[in-house]
Amino acid sequence: MPKTNGILGRKVGMTRVYNEHGRSIPVTVIEAGPCTVLQKKTIAKEGYNAIQVGFLEKKETRINKPQSGHFKRSGGKGFYYVREFRVNDPESFDLGQRLTIMDILQVGDKVDISGKVKGRGFQGVMKRYGFAGGKASHGSGFHRAPGSIGCSAYPGRVIKGKKLPGQMGNNLVTQKNLTIVDIRNEDNILLVEGAVPGAKNGLLSIFTKEA
Image (cartoon, rainbow, N blue to C red; front, side):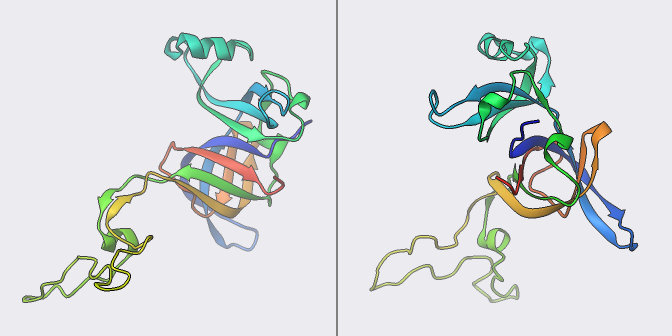
């Protein structure tokens, strides 16, 4: 069975399990796969080797004509999420092939998981970066502001990368070296130690460390 370096999933929530020593382990529950191979990309045609996979089937009534034409080559089923994973030999995969957890991962494996974190909107430096802020008592003229951000004479500008108020969250974050605690193949469920980025039902990309 050819192997890819990752699989798609969605975050179900968090819970805890107990190991053989009775230790409580916080885990994230992930519905991982099955994913369907939609397209094979090769160095000769696209300039790199990869496979395109689809995750979470979509009703036919929700698929537009361009999508329908693309999905038809792999069996006609549509998907909400379409992503790519690099592989060494795309030709070893078949269009329409289903990829499951057991094809890629085992209990005890280390994985990197990418997801989009919750958007927090425009936030100040105290919430965005954990600044302490000024005194809250009467008479203080400094409460939640960032304070001095530059020099008057030299260099006479704000240094790039200065921590200032701005958009917080809603960006892609990768949590690395997470351990797989349990795999429940019959339900396509993955239990990963610790927290992963994103909200419930958010899309996750799960990468093996062999990539």
